[in-house]
Amino acid sequence: MLEKRTTYHDQTDMQNTLKLREVLKTLPDFSRDFFRAISTTTSTSTRIKYAYDIRIFFQFVLNDNPLYQSCLMTDLTIKLLDQITALDIEEYIEYLKAYKDKDENYLTNGEKGIKRKLSSLRTFYSYYYKHEMIETNPSLLVDMPKLHQKEIIRLDVDEVARLLDYIESCGDQMTEHQRIYYEKTKYRDLAIITLLLGTGVRVSECVGLDVEDIDFKNNGIKVIRKGGNEMIVYFGSEVEQALKDYLEIRNGITPVAGHEHALFYSAQRKRINVKTVENLVKKYASQITTTKKITPHKLRSTYGTALYRETGDIYLVADVLGHKDVNTTKKHYAAMDDTRRRSAAKAVQLREE
Image (cartoon, one colour):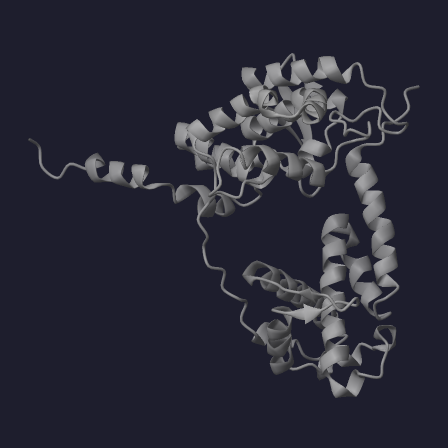
């Protein structure tokens, strides 16, 4: 009988579960009810984010409310939630813009970070209010911060070509020491960036791939999407060739025990991690453009933009990118560049010539 393979997703879930248990030890006892209740409807990564966000709120209460300055966080009771007012939450939003962590380092939040933390607090309050464990829900009396739309940063068609060309041939511009490392990682790096550009998968989905997830017969890869759903994402001939070239190199690598199934290996012969992929994308992209801060997510945006331009099908783009809500896709890709808007001027003819 074949032994069940432990996937990257399984390992991440286990790590997050253990991490969450440690964070819960620092939170008030009553908060455990909330995390137990959402355990069947949320992913472990979502729950750990909730836990960090809720802990920041309680730390704010301890720091800024004289009634609680002598208390430990674990001493707080559910009565506190009814004592918090809408004004307190507005002050919390202001606090989030710049505050110190336990090591006295300053942390900041932009619009997106503040909105997420307020959303976490709303969800937290909603659970206790719906279960009639508290009488008030001041979080609903505070407006959610408005997010200002930012321009989508992506690579242009010529920049994509130059990026891939650069990865293939940049060894000529390096010192001997740099060239030795480059030759070891060249095919891996080219395969990763070609995969990101050619499928639009998330960086977490990319590093989570096992070699068994590739199907060259149908040119597809099996990815675990946000929320744990499995999906087959298909790729073209350029991605196919890049993966096959890398697999020839990979076959000569003896991995560290426990990492035998990983598709992409680090220099330490372990499964490559998100930070390493982010760094290699930044390293290569900085040689192509100095005005755009390119990350793996920007490569995903590049793919989404190209797919929408070619097909004009926003629902297809949403499906391939794994967006649960097509409105998320519309917000990012339907407001395309000036070229599409200019074409609209000629699309409608008012009088026959």
